[in-house]
Image 1: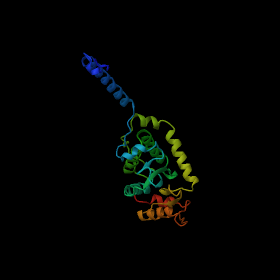
Image 2: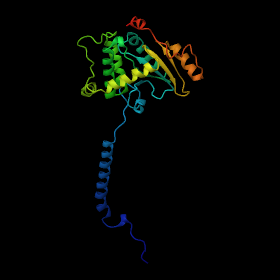
Image 3: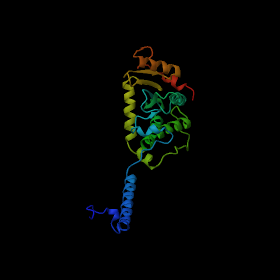
Image 4: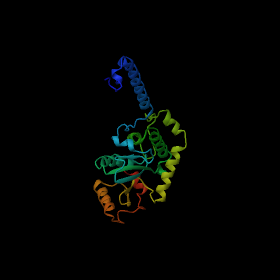
Length: 254
């Protein structure tokens, strides 16, 4: 008795010969679609010179150095023409490199004695950061401190930052950096900060913060962070109205 089952596709005469070109065509179309999707989806990239975690950083400002989601943040109120900041900034960054639970945040505070150059330098750093991100901002800070004559004298004649592409120039021609610098400087003054460098330490877990006037050695920073972590307030250390006299700032080593 003949079988009642229908023959399978594979057993039908000529099936393989007719189906193979069709399958090949479908496969090629799928590969083309996948390639197109890959081309239009932007790839997340870490910033040059920074750890891969930099891909999770939001656009700045504020500009941060170190592990973005660290428990503690040290906000440094700084002036790019301040000779004391010039000396202390690389020391503080090195300390941050050794303490991944702490990051550093820049806060502009151009001092009147260093104007107009201090604001001009701040505008350049802001525009480099706006155009190229967190790592580029800190590279600009490093370069400016390495090349400026400080105390409001600025860069030597003929010296120009090498990273000024068209996008940076367009930013410099706008009022965007001025608004940021002015807002940060006003915020600092409202908080009673009038000298640089001044450090504001924040514990993101406890929500507590304190301000250290002037530079702070590594041991002092660790002690202050321990105070924040323990929830203890120490008015002798945490004085938000302390400031470094202008004559002291100007006498600091270059």
